[in-house]
Image 1 (cartoon, rainbow, N blue to C red):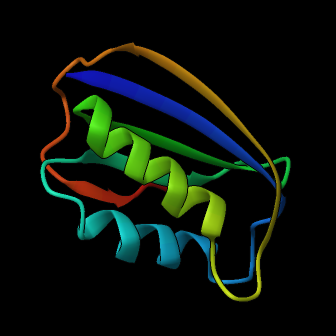
Image 2 (cartoon, helix red, strand yellow):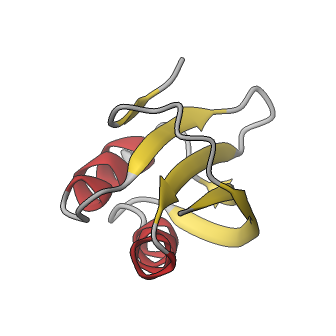
Length: 91
């Protein structure tokens, strides 16, 4: 199991982006973590799962919502910590 940390930049707040990530990731089996708005206008995604499922999370993050515009997605991987029960919105 791996941990994905992704920071999305662009028009990702106030445009349904978090909701679209939640919907998309909820369809990927075994992924846990959260999506969260950052104070600087970017969005953070922390996800844990298999390498295959995390690749799907990246595709969901790139796609966004119909109103979002992801200009950059900074992705890093580390070892999973196993601290999440599901995939949610964090505030």
